[in-house]
Image (tube, rainbow, N blue to C red; front, side, top):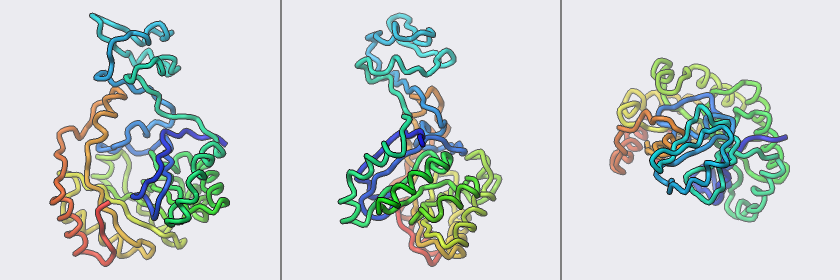
Length: 299
């Protein structure tokens, strides 16, 4: 069984207990305006082009068979409408062009994950599937989780919750902790900023809770979007009424998606959003802590 991976990050400590290896799967049904991994949204491999890294060496031109790579006045241009993502231009010694997304088998991924098992065992860590939405590649994710479980490795899954109920049923016995995103708490605003309604997400949260899942809510806080008492109160209410929720992680907005969107030839919707200060994010944690019985922390 093969899937599309865009990163395997080792020695992570913020996405589940202990020392972990995070496996990032491509593909996501949401289109969050603030997405910090926009290269994860499309399930297919993509070409990144960073114009500010181009040194006009022009070594990519003769490799492009569709004429997508062009030059004018010694300046390089990429015509994405002509690009067929053959990736022949990647690897010419220039950092401006890069492939994001690699087809890997379960065994290939596990070969990387298993290398650090001694660290997982010593720290209570393991493997975390992230993305994108890792359950968007549901069958592959289930195979990965099963392989890790057979190897005695703790499993976490970071999910937006907008996934098929059947996929959740398949992975539930294999997941030790769900890191479950609560981005916005009403359908209209959720649809405006992510492209999908909130209702099915809340229903899936209630479903995994009814099945005895261990859950940590992960809440990105975006200035001017959901940094308000009404949202905080609703998150606190959801946490308190969900038995399996052990805590809430507040994730302050950061603009890391800006350069990645540029590399994909897209505009970044939140480019004018100010980066919150540490004092602001500390205040968010304090406010939400005063509204619910569950532990609230800054991720």
